[in-house]
Length: 130
Image 1 (cartoon, rainbow, N blue to C red):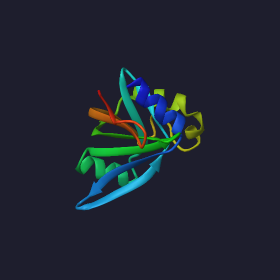
Image 2 (cartoon, helix red, strand yellow; image 1 turned 60 degrees about the horizontal axis):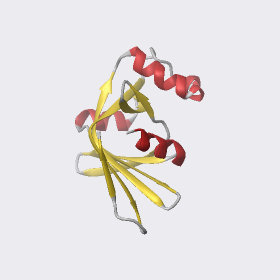
Image 3 (tube, rainbow, N blue to C red; image 1 turned 90 degrees about the horizontal axis):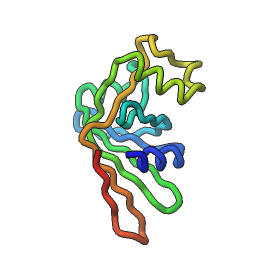
């Protein structure tokens, strides 16, 4: 999982796919954190992505860096604990202008039953599960 985290941090931006009914939805994200040995992302509860994940927690993200792409699929589980939110915001202090751990809007989610696949045109795919 640390390798997945490092790749996402190095890429800077990744794209998260969710579904809304039968329509796929994809948007850029930049937050990633490891807390209590789980891979977390962050969003706002007021956003459509939060509503989509509440209806269907299955998601996939994709990032590209240095000729390699990474896809991570699994279920995103909401963690409403203050400690998890604070940990994320401490690692992204620039978000504190828009979010706080106790604002009722900040949402952190972790991957459950995740499969990460590293791929490139020059090497066979490599899979990591966590």
